[in-house]
Amino acid sequence: MREFTLAREPDTSDELWFVEHPPVYTLGQAGKREHILNASNIPIVESDRGGQVTYHGPEQLVVYTLLDLRRAGLSVRETVIHLENAVIDCLQHFGIAAVGRRDAPGVYVNNAKIAALGLRIRRGRCYHGLALNVAPDLKPFLGINPCGYAGLEVTSMKKLEATVNMPQIMDRLLQALLQHIPNATA
Image 1: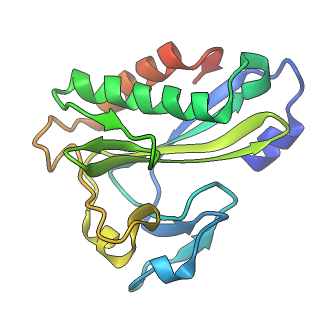
Image 2: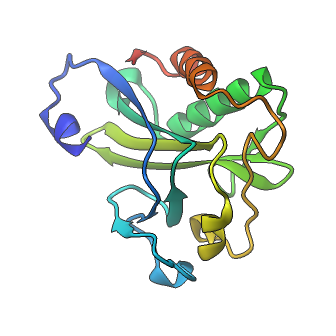
């Protein structure tokens, strides 16, 4: 992501990368190790994204958003809102009512976080992105203060009893992102 972003030319197309990771805690640039309560056997990786600490693992859909914000005329806050709204639209398709919060970026269902966001901006271009909890094991979130918030509950589409078919969710989230992010391609 970093190499792609640094090598971009003014006409380089924006891209969205969909991935799943093996179990890992990532600590953002502002991350404080005190928010890692019990890493157990899960590796900790320092990341150059914004935010505190989060968990990534199987059945969590991570989308890296490689976007030229300057070209799109977007501020960082506008980008965060577009990403949150894309996730909200995706979840609504699966019968889940979700909201974004101005005080704590991400997407929430009944005050439980279902999607986290963490971006890095360099030269007007962003990378890193969002993580949607489709059906991950939620126990690793107990080993951290998710996103730096002690006691923050984390949920998933599976826990909310939504149909969790990863290919369908990926397709729906892609459609929502393409509607909300100008010039993005997958």
